Length: 343
Image 1: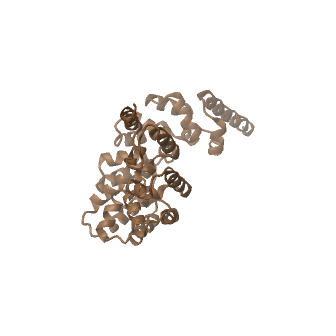
Image 2: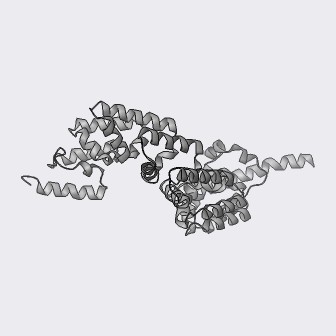
Image 3: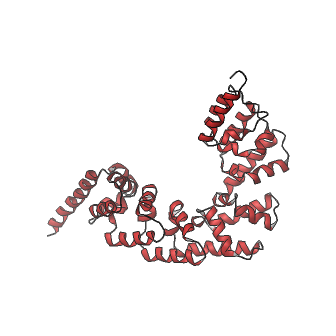
């Protein structure tokens, strides 16, 4: 009997391998990511495929999901159905869920604890988050829902404390605003968020009201970054702008009006500034129109290469054109060409 069992187990594993190959799964990728799955005696790859096909996923998408997160084949249809129904309480269609799975399969398949998921959903609704906000969370930061309930409670409690310490009497509104602005916040540590809030308040000498406006608005995205990364990038921004004669006040005005600058890696920020200066755009123009830094350096180069020969004077005209959408930019370029002298 023992011999029969020993003979049968490798055969079952070979069947799994053959099934996955037939489904188009990248076996090398799957083995590299989660090799232990291939030692399981019971897997449900065919049931998983049938389930996802019934929800509108293509065979190619299913193969990609399993390649990236092979543990998905260990989940039962019953567990998947329950989890899917819970997600559908938040998302409007099966296709939206399929799109999330394609992008982040681990967010759906990592846990089979559907009770914890249901508790998380109920808790997030109970603290005032709307269906729209939960949909945004599930789309952008699905790991929020596979957090332990205690972790989510810890972050919400911390945010309530921050809100009250800043003199705002509506913690529910505060949480709703800040999480809508930064849906990744609930998958960060309270220690990291606290350090970044303290950095912003002390560095920019903000009063409570000013800090509240910043972290509920354009500065919300900074709260989840590594504190060392935030400090290092801010120091680089200061050093770079100081080298062009900017004052401390001008640097702070620039960062507060455009906190996204802190997201930019040092080299990327420096290269963009250097290039714009080389093209005779003044540092004061950049500070007044910081969103030009939204564009990649290649976009900046291509647009300047097209605009200047067309007669667009970047010294006297608005440089915001460098960060416009492609459609709006092309319309402006055509208009500039038509109105250029000698056109």
